[in-house]
Image (cartoon, rainbow, N blue to C red):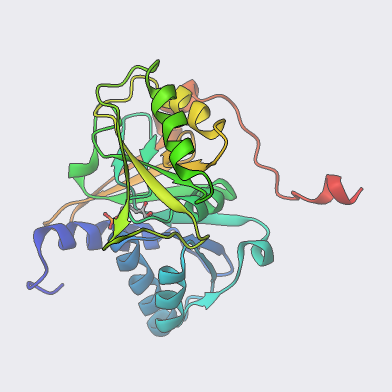
Length: 262
Ligand SMILES: O=C(CO)[C@H](O)[C@H](O)COP(=O)(O)O
């Protein structure tokens, strides 16, 4: 590997290469967004080109879709895929129960939909993103532009009764204008410091009108691959930890539309 890479990039690259081993011929694979996920997409592109790996990818953003096509990955939509074998994505924070904060790169909505529609979600990360309690990283919340100030006030009011150590809510900007997501929405960043009950926070936020989705990924991640700057990786699997037993049982349904079609 190139010695010109920063220590952080070497760590991300190591995690991405190990996680790429989860992708096998014939799979439908969710492709995350962000700098760590970009390493993964490039690595998978190499394997398509050099090893003849055959799989179809569902990108979680226009950025990832462009990169995936550029490196020769066959791109399909989530609806074309129906269900995914695995999704591999980065994260902004992860805790000991495999819960995450995501959305630092602004793609949390598609990322959550894609990860939830997968048999397995693998997070690729460096060690610095591990926390005892989620919340140090500002929690991104995607909101629709209509009535955004009112939505912000509703969020601030809701935070008033929650166990957090900070309550500032800021609108994410892109230069002088609000940041716009792939779906044409905006992002409010919640500076909470520490989230006492992340599950309750996720449910509370999503009940507020105007909120589209929040960046807490609770009970979604199955595997965390932690890359180190010396090229080594630690792999943690939910099935071999106590966290799995603490999860409420969820059943992922492959034929989402069968019932509706009658
Ligand atoms: O959630 C995300 C994008 O919405 C990213 O996965 C997260 O921000 C981590 O990014 P990076 O790998 O660049 O540190």
